[in-house]
Length: 171
Image (cartoon, rainbow, N blue to C red):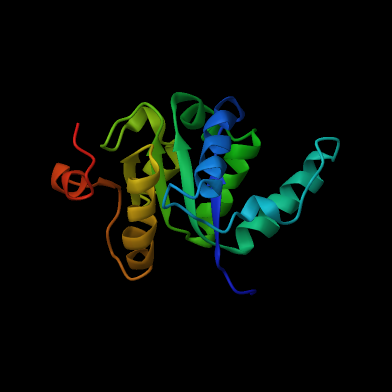
């Protein structure tokens, strides 16, 4: 298997503007947020067949060390419906046992079952839920993701308010 050094951002198509915002954070010199974007490799055109798109998604995920899931009601619905590309991604993420940071688009700092695709919950998959913002997502990628492989935890976790306060993210 190739060296995994990328971050994969999974999202429902309705949430693409938030993905674009994350790439803008990465490009902004005044925001300390960076990730090696798995979407930059193995490009598939929209006109590709579903099989080709799934193959490209799998190739991207094979080169991924961690995942940010943009958590929303649409992500929950599509990630658990078994038919969408997001459902395919969720299945591949589980089979590859990748750490998943759920960035709640509704601003919640806790695990919100309405934002997490059911396969993660039904598999008791260890995820970390955070609010959508560059500082806390970066913190989770730096702290939760490296500990994922050695952990025996299952289910959805979230950081205490003290972590947000320490990062200067007071409500």
